[in-house]
Image (cartoon, rainbow, N blue to C red):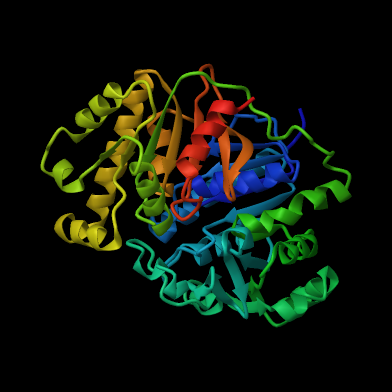
Length: 424
């Protein structure tokens, strides 16, 4: 059995598939596990991604889960490790990015890593340590209104420094523009200055390839999925990875389809509006759920009445609507109600013959795959930047497109269904 080369720990489910998508595009066979697998579980793949639901839990719990994932990945023989978080650096001043990065470095016996959430293909770039979303700074992008991790400071050096006792530095664009050797020299200089974590600028894919090459000797890399662009070539240069022309191939799955949306992000709001203009949809009302109304049953009945076509079942709302619900129910209860309702709907629809699920939102995706009993996923071809088609591993595979709330074009839901229908 071929041992895995790259071991990845992702802090949410859609982020894990986003990362796996990048690695498959680079020719690595990728398998994503939902949570830390059993200690004796062996998986044949070049890259293994453990998907946690640790982005917004208490920092000490995120650290414990991440260390458990690291231990399993080390048993699988992985030679390098990657801690993946959101391209908008979703976190708070208490964590969880800094504490997890520190703990992983300690466990690996190393004293330096980079932090680079840049994903230029999706409009996330870093310049002079400041994170941009499209043409605006992070704190002007809508992320300042995030219900769980409001991002009000675009300077990632400052943000990360507030999360860690380690010294935080910067690998600026000027250095990256000079190439991988210049970056390696900058890393040596930062180490000598006592810097343990360094934000790395990146405004293009070319910068990410430079960073990937420069970090080939690091035990740990941290960042968004974009940082994985340059990693497959490192293993190829070391004669550890062959050209894999069919890394994204998945068998075709027959059966019905559904779209489930729980994210309140701007992109998902646009996708929901695009779908609703011409196709059937059912809205989940958190206040009705809280009041004990049979919303789940109503949604399943709605889907059964449209058995000849896919439907959208959504709880997506505007930021003002989300705040109003949170004021009424509380932040944690509001989110939990929606996630569990969509998870229950997914489970019932699976029992009714649905075999293909398009899911919007990281927290929602996590709840849905758990309800469906999915333990691991094979990663297929890209649907939109950051979002691949996937299939569950097991006797009766399911087709899944798990989308981070902020990702995808307006027509993503339709594109995703076509991709899942046409997997071959």
